[in-house]
Image (cartoon, rainbow, N blue to C red; front, top):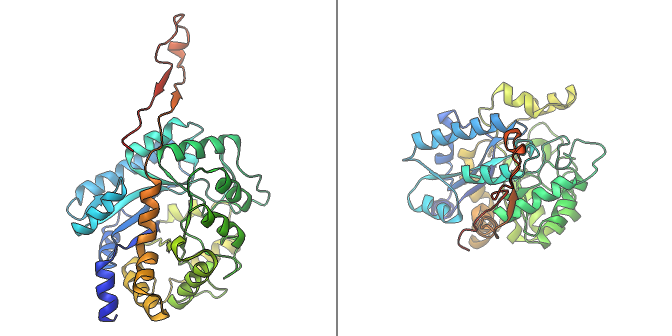
Length: 361
């Protein structure tokens, strides 16, 4: 690593736009620190039920507290700056699927209060919101899915579409009042994998102010079992050319120390051939771990990116996006479901709706 690259990496805000590693293992925090990561979007759940998701969030909050001298929980963009100044790793939690919402819009505000800042609408299959990329007949957003988007916009929770099917992705971009993200995917123009995204869809996302995080997973980069840092930089080059420098960040999707149970859930519905391809994919040579994040800074400078543009890709684009996306919009009357005990009460309930106060704008 050159002196210039080392200094730039140390001085810059570095954002890992998607990390699905097993954070229970202390080695993951050590790798984030070694990589000079300022803030990370950490997946804590995806296809799990509400109760399991709450437990997983509680587990991660306990880890944050245990390592409070090294971790700064991120609730707004200002916390990312604080993490940088205080030399801690800023961590915000995300869901890689809408299943934990369980047809209950009110849970979105609960998850936001608990620290969830990003929700991917679907994982690989169909849920109550829309369809994942592995669904042959993607019927697009459901009526409930449109309500979810409205409420996430209102609350200031980032909408992510990385695993969504093509139609669901397009309709979500159109339906959202606020910019959305695809935080771990590349363009099919660069490599024609179904897991990557249609170039015209990426252009539509960027036209509304959205951002794409380039993924560092070999099957999205090359037909070979292995891939290299050079392949990853090529995918970044393609995105920059396609949608512009201001709409590209990093979303490596590292799955370090992943447990067999998590892998089994992630591969549910895959064919034997698909599962084999997943497990046989090797970490990228030169960027096989979040600890090697400085290598990306070095490679971008070597490719000819300016210092300012390198900063954008390494983190400042994500930071700007979060600053715009995490502010709640306005108060909304949220109906409260009647329980069996209150349903028999003859008198009208004066608290039939709750007006959620809007925080300072």
